[in-house]
Length: 213
Image 1 (tube, rainbow, N blue to C red):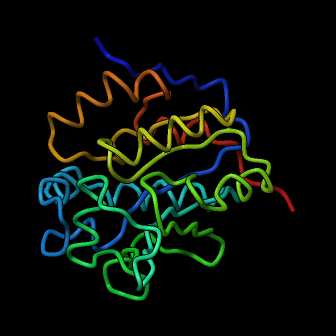
Image 2: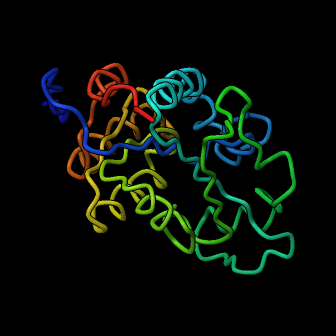
C-alpha cells in the first residue's frame, strides 16, 4: 500500500521552504563516507541532481532554500560515543569544520540567497541550531525535505518539524537511505506517517508562483 498522498493541482503549499539535509562530501562520496551503502544509494537514485533541480525551482520562485549541515568542532567538544555515528565521527575525526568532508557539492550551492544551518553536535537538524528561528523569521509554514538519510536524519528532522507545528513534505525521489530496503521501510513505516510523501515533480507543481517585490 502506497503512503504517498495525492498531489492536487488546485492547491499550493503554504509558505514553503526547501530543507536539504546533510548533502556533504563526507557523507555522499564513497571514498569518504562511513556509510558506503548510503553513498551508493545516493548515486543510484541521482539524489544530488534531482535535489539541485528542486532547489532551482524554489529559488526561481523566490522561496527559501536551507542547507542543514554537520560541522563538528576541531576539538570535538560536544560529541559523545553514545551512538554508532558519534563513535565513527570521533574515531575517524570526520565531518570537522574546515575540512573537505563538510563541503556541499557545488551542484547544490549554496547560492547567495540560500541559508546554511550548521550543527556541531547531536543527530538532528533542529538540535542546538538556529534552524527553527531562521524558518520562523521567514514566515515558513511548510517544509519540504530532501537529502539524506531516510534512516536517521530525515525521520528526526520530520518529527522535530511536526512537533514545532510545521507542515512537512518529503520529496521522496530526492532522498536516500543506507539501502533500498531500508529506504522503502522507513518511508512506508515512519516518514509516511509524519510527512506527505510525494515526488519532486509534484512538489514543484504545488509551489506558489513567482514572488513579487
